Image (cartoon, rainbow, N blue to C red; front, side):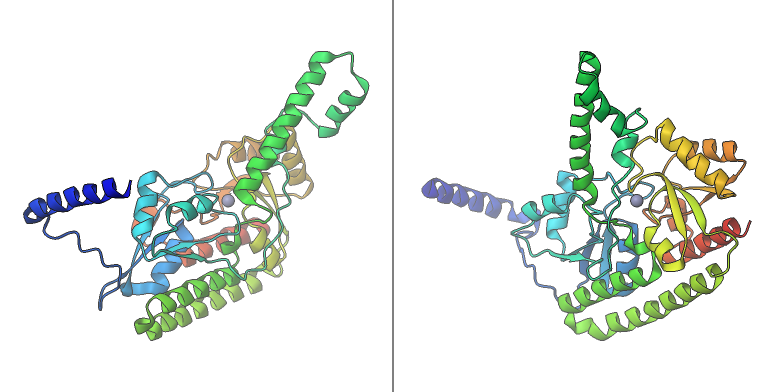
Length: 356
Ligand SMILES: [Zn+2]
């Protein structure tokens, strides 16, 4: 095998010699960063992109993997993406289970120089409550009914079989959700102080990869760190004395934000907006909204507002956008929106809803 390999490379070498005139010496394959050359960074989804650009400034070239206007929960990189990532200096991802494809990446990039940065490292993670997502996928009211069916209704063979199949599906979907979200809620960036931790981890990685520009990265971090503190204070003071503390959201992306400011979220869907809520869940949310006098049902731009609208109609509430910052649209990017401007809009709409 080795001999054949050598012969093959000899042929390839000869060929590349022959082609050298056309390809202009592209065989030079140095991975060392030269003076003035920008660090090449790939980011998993929008907040990571925004943070990396803010800290890296003009010393880095940042490419976001999830396209504008795409919901990131179910996104996976293509083979082409994986190849591009392998060529980069850094990959910044949020982690805590948000990017289920990271493991896949480990295999394809194990021989590359790529440095992976888990931005959420050090964040005080909230355990995933792990409810609704898999239950909502089914049309039954209560899982216990099926257990009863197992125990007492053996004569109904078909029903029993259905129940077993559903139980099997439960197992499967639990595993699925586990794979996607792990044991923790991944939406850390929605609490400003967590966003600061993510920025700091990104800053530390940049300093390590490009020590020559250490002061530059440190200064940028300091600037945005101050902006984060201002934002956090604004949230704290203005949300302190709202009339209500309950929000209804399309998917449960706001646990970290809620925890930071004493709010309670109820999600029409679970940690990921990929399942259609069933009638039971819809009824539960509607009941909650009525009982708690909820005036706004929040939806998000990257997910269909249909379900939120249905509930709002039934409750007599309005709908409004509360943005989980999982992705910005092309228009928002062009308009210069970023983490801070979207969070300011979120605060505005939260105040409107909680003081209505
Ligand atoms: Zn989410």
